[in-house]
Structure formats: structure tokens, C-alpha cells
Amino acid sequence: MVYVAGIDIGSAFSKAVVMAENKIIAYQVLPSGGNYKLTAEQVTEKTLTKAKLSLKDIAYTVAIGYGAASVSFSSETASDISCLARGVYYLFPNARTAIDIGGQFTRVLKLDGRGKATSFLLSEKCAAGSGRFLQVIARVLQIDLEDIGELSLKSKNRVDFNTGCAVFAESEAVSRVAEGAAKEDILAGLHRTLAAKIQTMVERLGIEPDCAVVGGGAKDIGLVRSIEAGLACKLLVPDEPQIVAALGAALLAGEKVAKGG
Image (cartoon, rainbow, N blue to C red; front, side, top):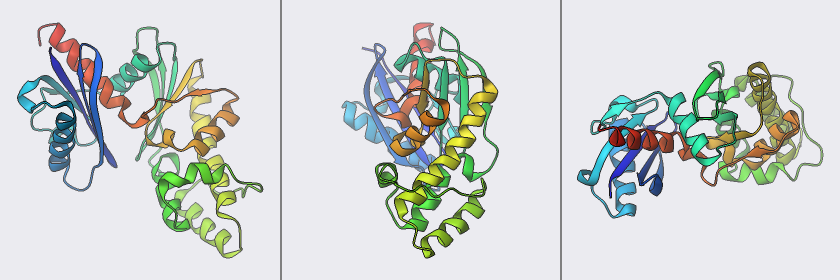
């Protein structure tokens, strides 16, 4: 059996996927921290341990992401966009639009029937256009990031925000807390703010069904529901949305091996 790996070293989280015969054998997600080289080694080691393999068992490794150059053992680096498209297509062959909500950026892609990205948009360099926005607000509200989604769904009186800027939204959230607004109502309002930015990107690119949402932000059910409401469509969400680009990198590695490296 031939094993391949995809490594995605993102600004916030790092992911590794090991595959064989076009099937996922094991995966791992870890915070990236400040040392990308060390994180790449750790996330790969943990994934290989799960798969009961060692690095010498891996025939080909493709690295992508913010810290791809730090993956010293990779066979090559590749485009995030092309690997993201591959990963989405593998999971959802009928998807023609993909929304990737990452720690630093949000990306919207249009896919063809072969899993290739035909066009894409990247959010501006502002935390309010990415999952970092939610991390900031979770700290302000003193709640765990993973609890945001379910809590926001309990909102009865959504607090609407007057700004789309993360810095000002953070200050506004502090003010709303001081005024006695419920945390779930604040979260619902912030989800609407982020969802509106994402909706604008999708509409600019031109939405085509089916539409999938991936990345760390896709684990926030409240945000997903808010995007669905804005776009008036049901979104496809993978079981583990953070590994999709790494999955695509592993698929690319498999293609390289099949073609003789």
C-alpha cells in the first residue's frame, strides 16, 4: 500500500492528512504556535502515530499554507486554492461554490465539474472577514470559542452592530456587555456581521449550487446558519472542516505518485 500526506500549516492551525488508495487513513489538527517548523513535525508525527506509520513509509508529501516552506520533509509545496478545491470536490463532488473561513482570511471559490478552481475571491486584510474575528469576540465575552455557535442560536433579541471593522466591533461588544446585553444576542449580531461580509463575496463571485463551507469557521453552527439565512440556501459542511485543504494536498500527492512522482 502506498501512503501519501498533505500538510497545511496555517496562521492559526496546522493540519495533516495521511491517505492510501484515495482513502483517509488518519488526520490531526494542532494550533500553529510561533514555530512552524516544530508544529509541522508535531502534527505530522501525531498523524503518523494514529496511522501506525513512520515518515519513511510516506511516498510523497505536499505542503501548503502560510508556513509551507517550514515543512522541511515535504516533497513539494503547492497552491492553497488548488488543494482546497481538490479537497472540497473529494468530499462533495456536486459542489460548485466553496466558502473557506480560515483564521486569517475568508476565501470563496467557484469549482468546475473536475474539482478545479475556476475563480476565487479573498477577503481583505481585516480580522472581521475571517475566523480571527470570532476568536477576538470569544475573549471579550470570556467564553470558549467552541461554545460560540450553540450559544448564539439561543438568541431572542439579536444585537446589530454598526461597524464591520473588528477593532470597532470589539469596542462595541464591550459596550453592549456593559449595557447588559445577553452574550447570545451579541454573538448572533456578530455572526450576522461576518455572514454579511461573506455573503457579499459570494454574490460578487456568483453563487452556484451546491455550496460548501469549510475551514475553522465552518465549525461554528451559528455562523453557518447565519450565512445560510443570508444566501437562502443550505450549506454542505464536512465532518471535519479544518482538514479540507490538507486533504486536497494529500490527494495531489497521490496524483504525483500515480504519475511517477
